[in-house]
Length: 376
Image (cartoon, rainbow, N blue to C red):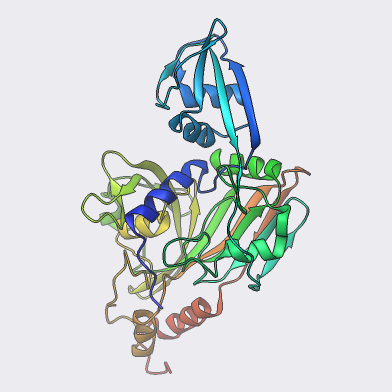
């Protein structure tokens, strides 16, 4: 089954959710903060308030509250008109009132969908998500999502997201990307985990099967904008990613606008010149980031219906080429997830092997890397 292209409305929603590094923020229970900014040079209002509030609210949550008109200056005890521009320059020593609306109860219903639980405790749950499962409900996917399954599995013990009382997804995976995803079960855990993704102390490692073989020796790579080479065979891809200027259902590398995105790609195994197994580590979590960056460097993910291509050169055997060309989803798997436990402080790393469909394709590529007549 082919991935449904996200509508511009869906993608705008996802871009807003990305404000917490692809995560969201815990649902506060309705509260008001009054804060005096430390003395110093003027800063963006969202940045200044985030620094002053510490872990109480993430910068992304503050930004959304500013845009919603929930942040007002306090002058001599008088409450001023709301400031709705997160980039407003706020001077040190000024006072501000931030109103956090209470979470709205979710109208979603639980669904008894099996989940592959890798780890669970009182604070969080780590799930190995199958390809084909949507994380959040959206037009065209109103049921059968990870959210519905979590509501059944966890009941009322879940954190909210962005002020809405629904499961506390800390980062997302595309529908047809498989692998590890962590969910917070308390607001405190959600804030702590979201902060780790925001400050890049949480780690994510993906495995992907891609067209061609990305190698440092490829002079074409060295000339691409945003591409650099690091020790250990790492290809660093640092660009801005935003909505495609002509096709609003796609994301794209942009020279101006968009948001910074950094992916580190490493060649793990090549199959002739036709395909490769690569690992990718993320510093950021933009919509379709790995898929966009892989296409940017000329090595799109096999099976990607949006950024990929179908045909392969003749350096693969017939059966391997046919399997790769017919692969029904992007061959992308979230294989490793690392974060510090929000309560114990312990560093935790979880790994999951390739799912059966990608493992079968990998085996075919290994058999057919030379186009051998032995391939079956």
